Length: 92
Image (cartoon, rainbow, N blue to C red; front, side, top):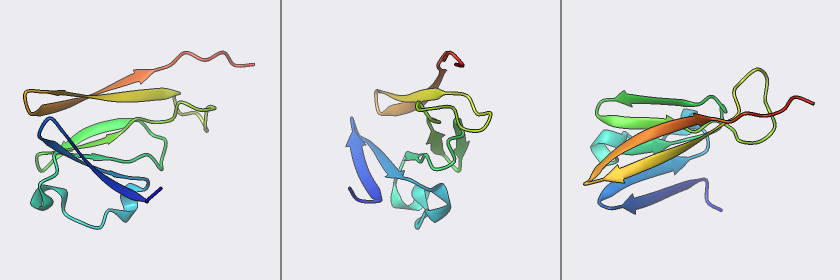
């Protein structure tokens, strides 16, 4: 697997990489609507310069005191939005 991927879904360009700290381009200038990363395991979605930065968090074992979460991107009519979902886990 490559460390970076580019997807286009329903006319929306998405840039995927593991570690946001290694972002090697300017997403808005490159025409990306979304940057998806995951290294930190911290669920977050925020708009910066018209680009959605999205980290779904981690659905695996709880790390530190972070929530266990997943995320989904919804693409409708050429517009994308993110949704973060916190999962309930039993602490055994």
